[in-house]
Length: 182
Ligand SMILES: [Zn+2]
Figure (cartoon, rainbow, N blue to C red):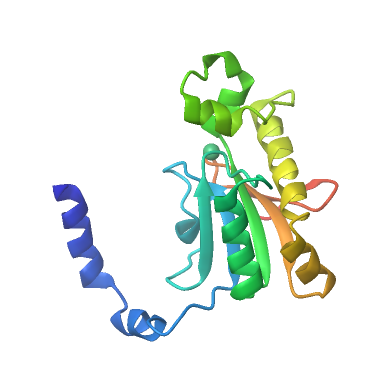
């Protein structure tokens, strides 16, 4: 616990107190990010975003299951109530969830197995498999009624990004190909 408290003390020294005070009245994030729980993938750090800017849902494998209440509530709240203008699926290099799906026979724990059993590993390389995985999540995101409606009204843009952990390269899926952003 000590390392967490020490970290909190450092946070207090650099925290923008007036920004936090302003946020007490509510939030108006511009982007919903659906990312992986992986400790190496921190959306706020990657996109240099402060408190109140990103509405983030993180789960194992950045899944966008249409039948999961946690996923559905985050999407409905961010898009329908907070009115974010972007919804982003953030995939990443060396994703353990995708690697695990390559060897489902090794998934012994009930929770992980039931979470990942509907997913599949498809691709000639891990990067290809992670990117295909991301495309499937984007397709699922786009069938949520609240997302569909906001996109049709021109109020929401959906996208899929791939963050390459080793090189810090960011790729974007344009609906057909992957484009290097930076
Ligand atoms: Zn991951």
